[in-house]
Image (cartoon, rainbow, N blue to C red):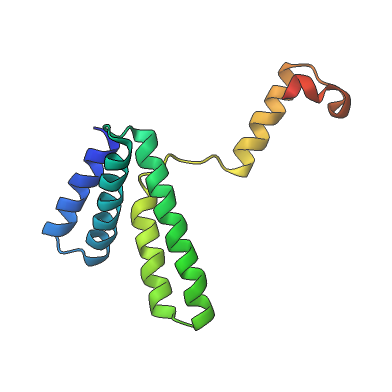
Length: 123
């Protein structure tokens, strides 16, 4: 199922289950997706949807920053909950340990002995 369709389906589910936070944030995301679709004048790809979701997350994080300055603990909790709802649509990111392991395997497979002199091969 396309990511856009999944967001819409999850909105319907949240609406029926009366999950206020999920419903609100998914409504905002769907509105942003529709605006992006109008702007691009084409159907959105999963990459387009991911970009819009990342932008929504960034806006929420900025809002949390402002709320921390004002001391609004309840608002911060709500915004963090909204971020948690939409983060599930983003692809999984690699942990630092996984990245280190991958880099070490790549270095070993290329037989690199001096990283400073041979970093061109690594890149």
